[in-house]
Image (cartoon, rainbow, N blue to C red):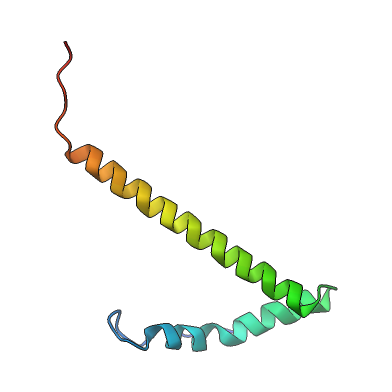
Length: 82
């Protein structure tokens, strides 16, 4: 698998997502080629990567939601026991 270049755009740069795609493009193509080389067809390999990415994004969102909930609970006033 090819090396992935480091980001050179700042976090607030409007083209950062495009630069990330460019950095990942050849590694992605290598991954798909490796899957095809062992018998998967290109479309099913791409769909698998899309599903993996979607599942990972859902997990990140769930973790963010849980972190926000925990932060809110930590800031909430505690009730005293009766």
